[in-house]
Image (tube, rainbow, N blue to C red; front, side, top):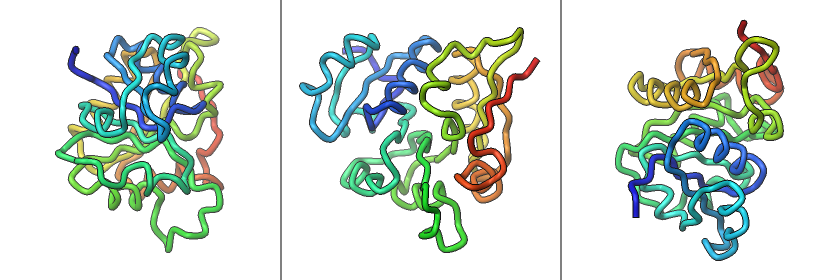
Length: 192
């Protein structure tokens, strides 16, 4: 079994789009869902990734959380966290339960011991999965996080997949700009 670069928790549209991004970037990728690896055979085959358990996905160097917001606590409960980079690609559609913080700050509390980077949540899964080279430029991914090394690893992943990246700062500031009902939600930019 080869070392796992990217583990994706969630195999729905967003998880599959992130798998396509990671494969395009040349990473070794595995996807997990709540029903187990056997339920992912056709998805894994179609995406050229490995089906795995959430525990194995969480052991990857970079872990992507790509489940609906209300399932995040359940999806990450009981997993071991030892300094991994976690990409929070989730969206809290109601955003009325954040008590003045950001959804990524809540995710960071749920995955204590990791380095959370908010990314890949402002584009729809159908757009995220496309080749990011368009109109002579590159599609933009916004990132934010509190750890410079973690952000550099996430930037490298997206750049290797062909995206341009824009660093919005820390989780509180940049995460807020990326949330639903905020300035960058749904914005699809091309950097020329």
